[in-house]
Length: 183
Image: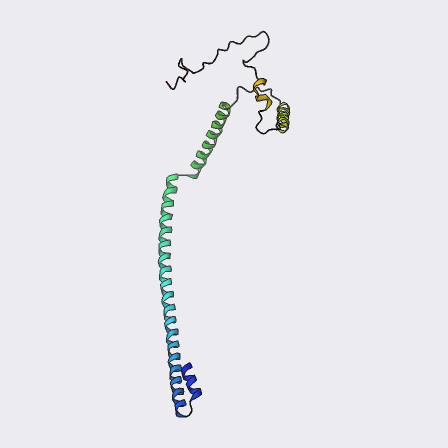
């Protein structure tokens, strides 16, 4: 069209009419192609809509079949489970058994080495002293005073007048100086 338009500007008379007629024919074909394109697009839209409807219907059928199957299986399972009162009885029994096991575990977990007369205030005071000692330590790698070698005796001691008969621990070395497990 642009070519014909440019030629019409430069021509006069019958040549101009010829180019004008050709431009009109091109416009008619353009409109015809546009109309055909719109028709094809409309047909494609209708085909897509029909395809979507078919797929949606198939999905619905599959969903309904799955729901029916699940309903049947659930009914079967519920009849196997039994009466709801039986389930309440079972859960009550389980709760009682769990309480009994908790009591047994508490008895087994009781600490025999810790005296019952330990006062919480004494423990808190000792904790405060330890925290103060940790804060006053200048070096982060320093050993606290209660863990230093000079603070602990080489042998355990007892109250005056009570002798402890504690045997020496074996060195674990054989006559050749190697650990006994190595030989």
